Amino acid sequence: MCASPNLFKNRRLPKFPEELLEFPLAMRQGKEELLSTNTEKMRIKTSPQFLVNSSSALIDTAVLGHAIAVGVPLWAIKEELATGKLIRILPEWKLEPTVVWAVWKPQEGKNPMTKKLYLYFQERWRKEPGLINEGTESLQSAYTGLH
Image (cartoon, rainbow, N blue to C red; front, top):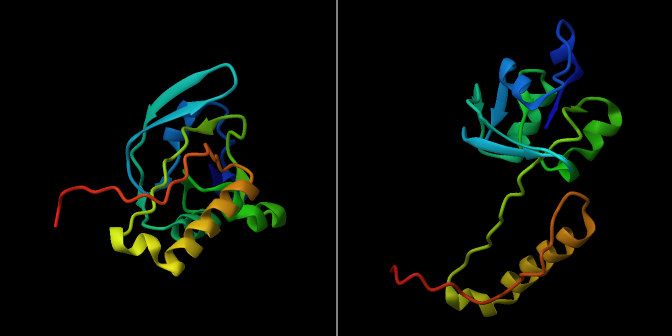
């Protein structure tokens, strides 16, 4: 979670997760979020004022000072954090990890470009802080029976 320091010119930073609801939020969707520290867990129901459809839109909304961006990958905002355009909100609290699926047609699993993209994601997951690699990689297709 991050925001522009300008969002807090006339307000104090939230100190507890439930205080997030007092601020405008930018997210990909409204839902319940599970936040945790090493010792606590808390679930809050979010109702975003800004719904966005990409990480770049989420970051732009935060940089412009419109809202607290929830669900921004830390690797995507390294530069903004380093330059002070964004600050982390409740840095001791972490959001429940998001599962990422790469989906392609069964015949595309053998395509060299599909394999190259898959290997790129694997490498990215290993290098970037904040990404979790559970070792569950697989290039197997998931047949759904749908046509």
